[in-house]
Image (cartoon, rainbow, N blue to C red; front, side):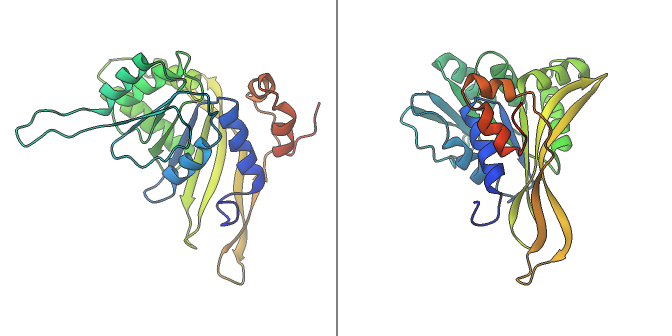
Length: 250
């Protein structure tokens, strides 16, 4: 993906460290933007000694670790029975002693159960969601949690999201046909009722196009010090994360 220009080596390094540090990651993007491909790539850095449970509508993930349980939802048969929804699979996955839960794509009330799993010791869980921006991805999550009909106040839902998720990675298929990571944003907390972001990396257009017709742009670090630095430190990756974010060690 680095060679194809989907992301820079620094961005790839940040995502590798995020996976190894067991951060909860949400990958957002439009249809065909490369969300599942990126999720497959990031999942390669999950430890081989971890038990992973994947939950999908149709099996697309290709994990290389030895301890993987793949679960797939099922539509109702012609008689209207036998349906297995993703929400049921997420609940059952929690009984199977997972180290990580990877939901291929959240698209309904299972979003609530996924957030609950991330909040109850299943660090390093990942998922994807259809959205046009990191902010939109959180709005979609809020709406999907509301679909669970729990009658939770909006602030409570947002607090669940803030405590569950660490990073939102947004990927786009741009006008030159190349899929690029547009943004890596850390969820920083809440100000009043609003979830705040800390953007760590973004793809910045420099204007115009290069000779071969590709967009002229650069993957740039904001050089902001993330909250997840402490988590990376517990895994011995603090210095590597600082280097990837182009921040001087302090």
